[in-house]
Image 1 (tube, rainbow, N blue to C red):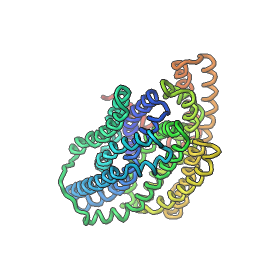
Image 2: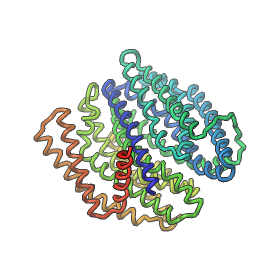
Image 3: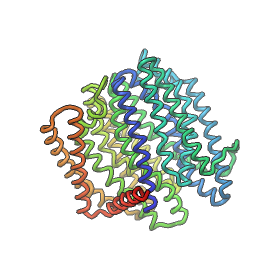
Image 4: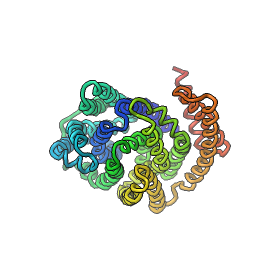
Length: 516
C-alpha cells in the first residue's frame, strides 16, 4: 500500500499543477466575460466533446485495464500492444463517426442541451459546437493513451495533460477579447489535440508502437463489449445528470449556468486532486487482487482508500461551506464578475459541497464493482439516482432556482453511495464497511469542530485586518492553517489509522527530495 500511496501522491501533485492552471483559466474567463452570454455559451459548448468522450471514452478506458492485464498474461507484451492498437483504431473510427453526426445535427443537439438559448446566443452556441466537436477524436485517443500509461505504472503524465490544454484556452480567451469570441472555440480544439500529443512521446518511451491493426471480431473486443455496455449506460447516466442540470439552468436567464459551472469547477478540483488520484492507482490493484483471489488485501484496499478520501475530503467540504464567500470573492470577483456573480457562485458551492464526500466514496465503490466484473450494479444504482435527481430538479427549480439544482445533485450522490454500500455487502459479504463508517464519524466530528474554529478565526482576523483583496487572502490563509491544525490534532487524538499512512507518505517524499 505504501508504493500505491506514493504513486497517488505524485498524481495529486501533477493534478494540482493542472488544476491550478485550470482555475486560472476560469478566473481569466470570469474576468473578461463574467456570468454573461459569452461565458454561458463557451462553458456549455466546451463540455460537449468532453460529455461525449466521458460517456464512450471512459467506458472503453475502464474496461481496457483488466482486459489489458488478462491479454498480457496470455499473449505477452506483443499481444497486449496489439490489443492496445486495436482499441485506439476502433475508438478513432467511432469518434470520427460521432464528429460527423455532430456536424450534421448541431442545431438539434444544442436545442436538446440548451433549450433556453435563443437568438444570437443559440447561433453562437451552434458555431462553437461545430468547431469543438472535432475534439472528440483527440480526446478519445488521449483516453486510451492515459490507460496505457497507467497499466505500465506511469501515473503522473496523464495527470499533467491539463497543462497544455489550459494554456491554449487561456491564450484563446485573451486573444478573443481583441478579435472574436470564436477564437475561444478554436483554442479549445487545439487544447484537446494537445492532450493526445502530450502523452504520445511518453507512451512510446514505455514501449508503445503504433500499427494499423483493426479487428472488431477480436475475442477481447467481444468481451469488452459485454462488460462495457452497462458501464456505457452508467457513465451516460452520470453525464446525463450534469446535462439535465445545465439544460434546466439555461431556462433561468443569464448567469445561473455560469455560476453553477464555476462552483462545480471548485468541487472538481478537490475530486481530481484527491479522489481521482487515489482511484487511478487502486483500480489496477483491485483488478489484480480479484484475479488472484486475495480477499484480505482486497478488503484492506477498499477500507484504506475510502478512509483516505473521507479524511481528506470531509474537512474540505466543511471548509468550503464555511469560507465559500471569501474563497469565491478572492478567486473570481474582478472585471465582469461582480458581487451578484459572487453571491450566486458561493451559494452554489456550499450546496454542491454537501455531496462531495459521497461523490468520492462512490467512485471508489464503483471501481470495486468493476474489478469484480460486475458492471450492472453501478448502472442500476446510477439509474435510480438519475431519476431521483430529475424529480428533485423539477420539484425544486421553481421555488429555489439554481439552488434547487445544486441541492438535487448532492442528494442524488448521497443516495447513490448508500445504495452501492448495500449492494456491495449483498454481493461480497464483509468488506470493511464498519471501519469506513467509524472513520467517517470521527472525521465528521473533527471537521465540525474545525469549521467552528475556522469561521471564528476568519471573522476575528477580518475585523482586525480589514477589507481588500490582499487582506482577505491573509485572513483566509491563516484561518485555513488554524483549521487544518485543529483537524489534524483531533484526528490524531481519535487514533485514526490512516493518519499514520499519510504522514508516512509525506516523510518519505520529503526524504526523497532531500536526498536529491
